[in-house]
Amino acid sequence: MAGIYIHIPFCKKKCIYCDFYSVGNKAEMVNAYLQALCHEAMLRKEGFDCDTIKTVYIGGGTPSLLTDVQLSQLVDGMMHIFDFSHVEEFTIEVNPDDITADIAMSYRQLGINRVSMGVQSFVDAELQFLRRRHDANTAANAYRTILECGINNVGIDLIYGIPGQTLQSWQNSLDVAMGLAPKHMSCYNLSYEEGTPLYRMLDKGGVQVADDDSCIAMYELMTGVLREHGYEHYEISNFAKPGYYSRHNSSYWDKTPYLGLGASAHSYIGGTRYYNPSDIKAYISQIGMGNVVATAEEETMNERYDEEVMLRLRTRRGLDADKLLDVYGEPYYSYFMSAVRQFVDSGLVEQAGSVFCLSGRGVMLSDMVFRELMYV
Ligand code: SF4
Image (tube, rainbow, N blue to C red; front, side, top):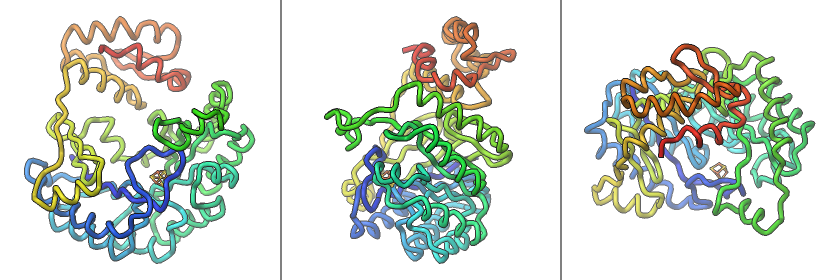
């Protein structure tokens, strides 16, 4: 099994908290970039197991900025290069204000069967603070439009811990989302990433960070509401109705191979991670000259162990220490078993035989747990 990730690094304008690689307002570069994506796919298809592609994910940036013609050229181009006949999950990320019945219908006609919609909040003041382009009504309407066009596997992303957000307004966002009944929910705690406008606001004292107690209360409210509505909490920030886990994202945590195409895209092939440069112009020009731009990352055994522990513990399936022993050997196994003991004793990690996973409280304190379990 393998996956393909295609990065569309364009946005109409940047949201204040976002540190994904994307640029605002560069419509004139889109066509050249789409051509480069197909060219990169040609250059890299050798050495990648193209026959078992089960998931395709078009992410960004804002893939919904592409017109139906541009998107269809991209998908057709990829289908000429790769065998999509075994694809089971084909996702596109969208922003609500781009969604019309025509564009949603074009997704369906192209074989896209899953939509991930960045809503972030159903409270207009919070959306304005985050500099999102849509309001709550637009988001709810976009959701219904996608459903009416025949794609029923739709996920909604929300953010909690927004300055000014209250437990009541968070409840309101969750209530509206539950009224729409998406198959998948991703809920993230707002983070302050260096280099973002939000970080600069924080630096200048222009923003009041939500305190830990409020974030914990919001987290507990969220897990309770989602559980009540039948969602399974399958990864730290991800919840799904039974049978609707994101297969593509799960493959990142399972270390399934995937080929990432586009500026800033990552790949994981044959046990090695590769990184494309975060520079659209350099990407287009290098690919145009026939150069593969992906750089392999040399990982030490310690780094591999750290990544394995963190990725496995993020998920509900957890980490099987016996497998850790098989793959990494005795010193790493012993280190893990001794480091994890304090968290089992304090109830942050649950143990069932050789399998360890974070408890509800452990998820809230996962950064601290991961730090302590790292080998490096
Ligand atoms: S639309 Fe998405 S990718 Fe673009 S700036 Fe906003 S959060 Fe970032």
